[in-house]
Length: 260
Length: 235
Image: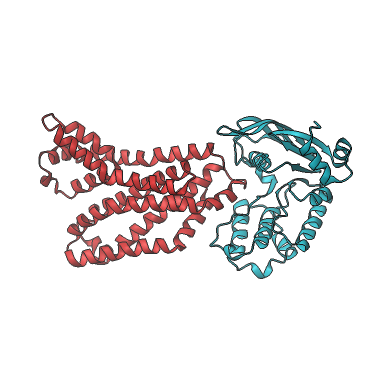
């Protein structure tokens, strides 16, 4: 598996898209740091970008890489290599190279700006952790979609729909539900509904760490009550981990059964 | 050496193989023949574990191929359509597969033999069909495994390369290798193989030597005997 990972990783690192992705973050965080002149504010601004963009790029990249390397995969399948290793290796190659682009793209300007002497280093680490989690989650979901759809156009379509659903539609439906049922106690529902969407979960996780939950009013207090505690943090990290593990398990399961 | 036991395979409602029983003898060259779409490639893919049979088992040596991958260490496989990732060089893909398999190779010898030396630094997407097939041949034969599976090995090769391939295969036969081929070039099959298995409608329709085939069909010419087999029911 490590060898497949190595080849996928270096194949991606050499590709133009990884550089574009890396340079984008590099430029974005440099400009934001320059304009905001403050680490904490920049983290909040970046959060809004990261939370939407990382899932989008993760899904598109994952689907694209899978379809692009289909030929190579077939070549590998005839070799004495375990099937799971092939797919796990490819997935990890995609996910780590994406994570690395984000890590370096955001990390370098922040480090130069003096992140290590500041007191927001922990907040920044959470931002990075969330970005890494989202990269892993969405490339795993993308691999699932690509494995189940031989038709590339369909695969891309579903991938975009998935992203749109989790990044935009879910929140919309969630808000409508909140407004529609506002006469009822919704604290538990809100909490649970947040857990089911990795993007929402990541957003809340960072917002609460940044101590701006006061802006969120009563709901913020409840969220703080839950996510602010150690159990809350562990639960949310656990749920994010589940969002990686479950798609990954399904991917390996489907790959095992699939005819090539 | 290899035994197919009642192999069934369907893709949705399309039943491709409906009970293949076949034994491939050690040290012999067996040709799997059949009309287009008869399931030859599917059968080979099932043997390699790339497809899963709906029913039935395959034994390679002593080991069952189901949920197993280590038996592939002793198999060299030449896929029918050489699909390579386009953006890497010939020598890179050879190095990559060598690294992945970690077995003794004879790649330089084969590169020499197929005169691929000048193309080692060419990207695979820039190669012509014939050269792609040569790379394909080097990749699949370089491990010198005792069992060789060749799916349409002649496709895209010019007459000179075809002769070279035949010579190479004859050498391999002398070394006692078990070879399984599929091809639509009947003269090639006739020259190379000891044994013919003809697949039709998902079953083994004829299984025997070339002489058996000629006497069953009453034809003296191999190509006509096969055509005869397609037209009439001799089984």
